[in-house]
Length: 364
Image (cartoon, rainbow, N blue to C red; front, top):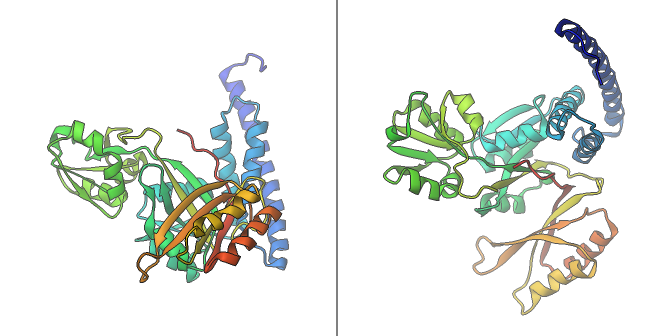
């Protein structure tokens, strides 16, 4: 318990603590630089999502308060981001423009020290990383109410990139307009098609006579709301700050537990298990009776939990499908290796899209 002191005395104590923090942060940075030198000798990657997840989780568990866990996580995420930037200035492509949910997810995962590059499409994000113009890419892959992002799955099937991390973000849609706008002024509401679908009931109840228009992104919708009188946009609250808009209504999504899952793409996945991992794979099969049962049986035999199964049509081959699976475990684990060997025997094609640390549950 701190002794009762005057405000000036307490501020002096805070200044002394800040000086100690600065010395410790720079000491930590020197260790990071030494790690960078050793990684350079072995040609090891800078981004280690499993290690970063473990550091933040350990500190969150050890936190005695009064700082809440979410702030401890946020603080150390930025400390890690700053230390990582001493090793390499990460270039991160994301589905833009600025202030999209993908941008927010990327910042949440990789911190402020990375260099963020907005891309106009999911395909462009893949291309930026494949070409070496970006080190990592962040794209949406699934929404809890609207399902899988088909374009992302199709690109994963053909790309050499691997999934090295995932991010789970709670989606809180807001209705935005010009600072002097009101609900009564709105003649149209614009947003990405998924955002419009996720707010369908709210719009029907509160703006029954107002038309809706699809946009390429919610951030682009926010730009239109800024530039066009009578236009409202569905986007996150960060977009209001970025584009100088006012929030007319918050949390207008029909499902309060609306989550979107994003994946981080790189040339390598997380090579070492973190203890709480997922592996994503895809396979194609012959059209035979009982084939899907035979493909899934090895996972049950080796006691591997399948989290998701999704099918996508094979392009150019009507009525034939690719199957995408997410499972609990890392490809380096013996039981996962055994299951994948058995699956490959029956598959026309098997591709491991990546093993990576499972994302922590987002704050709702």
